[in-house]
Amino acid sequence: MTHLVRDLMHRGLITCRPSATLGQVAVLLDQHHVHALVVSDRDGRYLGVISDTDLLAGEWLSSDPESLTIMRRLTAADLMSAPPVSVEANLTLAEAVRVLLDKQISRLLVTENGQPVGVISISDFVASLARDEKPRREVVGDVMSDAILVCRDQTPIRSAARTITQAGWRSVLVVNAQGKPLGVVSGRGLLSFIQNGIDETMTVSDVMHPALTIDIHASLRAAADKMIQNHYHRLVVVDDKNPEAFPLGMISSFDIVAQMARPDSIWQK
Image (cartoon, rainbow, N blue to C red; front, side, top):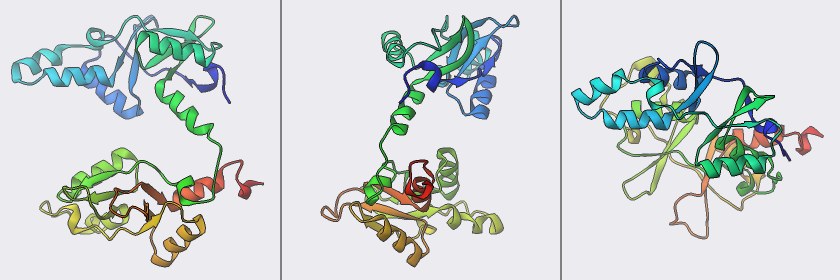
């Protein structure tokens, strides 16, 4: 269990100049897969923070050519939150959370002896909750991913590929307009388009494969057996007692392997 900011913070700062355009800020956020940048001047002074939320405001305001021209002239200095709110690395997590809530912000600059050394954000606190969870590995519900990546059956194939890539997932559940699961599109199912190219008129319903389901209370052994027997890498988790309900999650071969790799797993003792 972690207790201090230094135990959860991300060391190092990803920065931009106050003169950076909103387009340049967007590129840096995308390249580094972060939600915010620290704005610093040539002398190394930290002036503020600009986040993806700030850019959303810019995108929303640029609704016509004239507004777009104005917004493209704006810089990080124009939209950043200033000054940056900071806490010392030896502050307790409870105190850091209090600052986040009081200031109604999403991240804090972390300092050591007054010098900025990193950032701690709401995402770091959420991740700590997941890490502190006591491992269980008896049934599918203990290991499955509760979140499901979903798309409509009329989604173009290229859009599905982009969604899978951006989300960092390996598959997407296909549903109809009423939310009923129809199938699954996986990365393997899209490989043929690398060789043959994409027909832009095709949708995910043309390439999906049937979704195999498993009950949330089934054993991990049963899940593994079903994957092996059907040559599937993932199963849709359902509640057999409520077959009409929306799926509860997904379980993949990776989920099972990740549990085996945990330091407290029986496989590591």
